[in-house]
Length: 283
Image 1 (cartoon, helix red, strand yellow):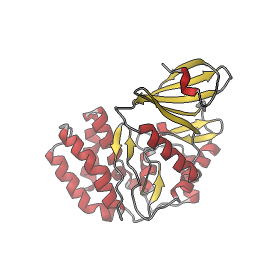
Image 2 (spheres, rainbow, N blue to C red):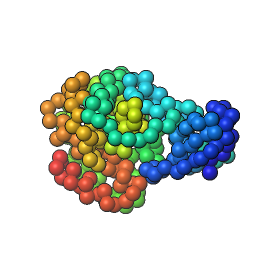
Image 3 (cartoon, rainbow, N blue to C red):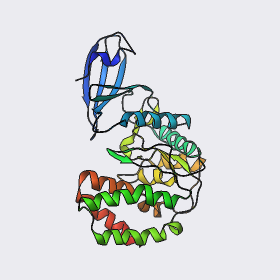
Image 4 (cartoon, one colour):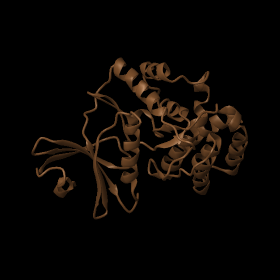
């Protein structure tokens, strides 16, 4: 249920319809129409269960936009009783053509050119429904181990989703990371850039649901291939602006250990075999 007072600071018009939308595993999502013909996209969840989730999402979207990314407009985020809401501009999802995907690749490359003196972020945020810590580090391999892999490995061990043998394999991988990953300056990354977080619309491809940080730019490229790669035009557009070192796809499985661990912790042991395959390949 969407309360009428949710839009009191945006419009005096009453709600005509609030239709649930599919696709979210964490939030309830709605396409809301008001009597004045304005449309909104609304996300809702429990404020006590996921404190400040939408606050951090709004911050992340604003930072992506400042770096040149196309995003939905953040209109408001607020809490009513124990429900937190994020109100965004509504963009009907549709197919994108090759030119729009190429532009999306260029957009991501431009965004990745926004840098920082350190890896990390000034605040923690969320990856899915899990808290993502972003303490700063001077090198990517240190940041990746301490702020990405180790917290998820610990959580999986606590759930018995991973075992001591897996932890020992990760330790061997940690010893090799510095030589496996090319050294680059920190880049602003989306952080959760699987195919579902590209939103093709009439105005082009938008980025949604970020988990931002200053990290290695290849984490975004890697995750864009995790559950099915994007169109070739997208990668062509990216490489036309910002080249990657030779054969980056060979490194992608290393970066994808993080989202796979997140999925293991959120959705269960079906993701463990993918993690085992990657570890066996690189240790």
